Length: 503
Ligand code: FAD
Ligand code: 2HG
Ligand code: ZN
Image (cartoon, rainbow, N blue to C red; front, side):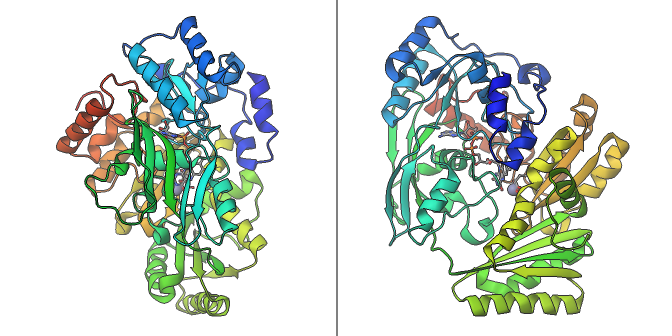
């Protein structure tokens, strides 16, 4: 066990270091959340023998210390009890594994980079983990249309580095890019930092190859922008978190690498001004605006202190990060600098800095992207990822501070203002049922009252099926259940996730 953690700590990655700083194992998910095992088959030595006959010794992990990291999620909230990890290298192998598991009623948990934040990527009981880590080949890139076709296990950052050499970028970017897989991104319909500009994966993903529970390979891997031939089946796999099929290949549209990139980091005195600034940025920066992110004082303070990262400006109640992607450096940087100057005059921006040098921009982005891991240093973090109408966007943060009082170390809010998506993090020394019950279902009730969504971009996973009804109507839930029944009649794909037990 220790061996695996040490191996991971040695990675030169500040977020990974924080994540594994504590050797304490999280409580078993089944105990913590009082879940009963469903009547699936139990893995026998003969099953392991079968998997070894297809994959060989090395791609079937059974040693406890090798399997452990696959049982624990990124925020160390969930812990499953899997005893087997399979590492297929091809769609055919995935298909053979699933056919066998379906025949024997063995449940499986697909896993990409295991950066998911809702416990969807790790087993709950003894589900077999199917890791996509070795399915990491790039098939084709058409640098004229921008269509990239690759296997599900390709790491997002590796893909971005690859397409950049061909004058393109990946249409999504997130703090977990160095670890998450494109198959995981697709399965969660990940949003990220530039959704405002490049849209979500239902728009960018051109095609998908997936394997159904019974092993049937569904080939929807077209790399066309337009294809209106019947039902748009690829969408079933985008955001279904491994419950309808396992994504093996993805065709995705990559936008052109912007010739000019500029970044502003601003101090703002209150949230009302953050919203006014957003309105102004849309109007004054128009077509070049690529990101509009906000973080409150505690988000940045916690990140600066816990991760020892520099804050390029002084301390303010709110911070706003504005990025532009354009094609004319002189024009774009002048536009952003003018925006800063004029909004300093109006008082919407109190202080700020604008950068176009890659190193300085990286320092600012690093600060923003590290907020997700910063709270973990304090012990335990309750994370909520909700969509709220902009006028109510920040309301819950002060309400929760009051509600929790000294039961929380910090309550902070940050997120993708451009998408109406706020991340609320509540840090505590350790998980307690008392704090949990003050937060849930309270937050979801409040979100539902303003017609928000209880999951903006992270998904439902293991943590939220019991709350999905706050954002999904009964009729929609029934259709989800019908689709699940059709595509996975034995329920072996990622059980205990997404769908509530009773609809
Ligand atoms: P995993 O965590 O391994 O899996 C996620 C889900 O997808 C699970 O249900 C799993 O079973 C399923 N799955 C994985 N691969 C497959 C497959 N091939 N076929 C079928 N199902 C599969 N998310 C955002 O949306 N926006 C952000 O800005 C963002 N920032 C983050 C920053 C940090 C520091 C961290 C740790 C996480 C962040 N996330 C963000 C959450 C997470 O990175 C995304 O949900 C990501 O898309 C998960 O990809 P993954 O490969 O790690 O998938
Ligand atoms: C982000 O935007 C991620 O940084 C993570 O979606 C959010 O951890 C979180 O709360
Ligand atoms: Zn986010």
